[in-house]
Image (cartoon, rainbow over the protein chains, first blue to last red):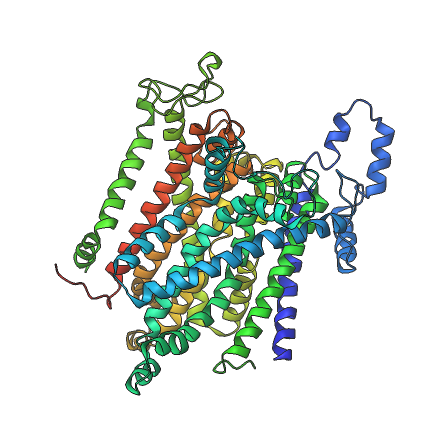
Length: 324
Length: 287
């Protein structure tokens, strides 16, 4: 299993390498470059710009710049933000916990709701509950997360107000009210709308998946055997069927991680949540390329790491799977 | 065969309705020029009107008719969805077919690349491509609609590729393939004439999923400001401008999102209907 993990990690390196080259050259070959705003500023002299170019190494040929960047990156240094003059490492390290809070909370809510919905739908297929849930999941899967987020803001911030205080029910920007930084309850209150926006599509998708996966498993021989030897209906559902239906979820979640991060990016942008997605969006608008490349590479490594973890977990949980 | 599939498809009532909705949307955006307003001309004295008989969906901050903009936006959004789906399916089928049919070294190289793309945070790459491609000094890259079509296809071919590979792995062992090979059929002949036609059903079904997600991706990118560039309206870019006015005129944000939602939902239902229609194992209960 260790050799399997090592091989997986080694396999991903060449691809990461190639993609990093493509992105680096694309970003750096755009005309104007990172000093465009400095050039437009009348207070900045030509000499100062040249000094800045020299300092940032922007005059070297692109392959040299790439070599320097990738070398630094392998040493764990993602460079300096052009806009904020701060190390990209620090900027990303500040944001990662916030994104993980948002994604983690959404993920928790998703499992909390999707698993029971999926099981109950599969238990009584074509019942009223199943029809209602199927319709709701179709809706949930088709709503774009950015529209849902805006809709939640309009409903719970603009239209509905608390009748006693006249204030909106939920805050719609940032992680904390000013002056209440780091208070858990305040953060949870700020999490309500972003998590709702991010989770709805996932609840829909996973409950549908679990429903069909349960329905397939109920036709398996071992389920029939369990029924034949007189196991109660609950035992069959929750012990025999559910265990096997949940297993593929691990792989599915790992495959869905990129989309989960994509959803988080939209939600962070709409709700000004100070996470990696928001950082990335701001950096893309300001053409702050060290931040852009840094976030892409860190997220890619994070996702690959989670994928390998999911593969290993699957092999550990399912004795039928053998890694060579 | 086609008739059987069509009959089974229309037995799925919601899929039938979904087709009607989609056809209506396509026609409405095709005939967008029949409205008396321009999608781009500004009329600031006329801004922020609520829905009324002259402006069905009201007007935006520059006095443009939101209804007209949504119809024109539908042209772009639907075109981008359709073309990028075709491109991505074509690429995916090519890679999946080569991989599944030949196996061995080709397969493992192509599948490693596919896996790498699948684990990549594509939205970040899409944003970088959307932001920087149009700034390159390449004349044909000045068209932001074209860029969006290409980059969406370039980052979504992996799912059809995997699907087609899986189908080819099974089909290439079948007797009709062996027979054709024994008769001297070349690989390209076998792939195109014998194996691919048997993959049409699943490919079409996955095409609907691709199209739904392509429309969401395009709108999302344009919404973030890295997709189709103003003044060309798309549902995503209308939503983006509406967002700035959301406290003053929340209704403007409602309509473009609703269009995306309805379109995606219709496509999803069509996909569902097609899946049932193509699946030989689904038992259709006559009512």
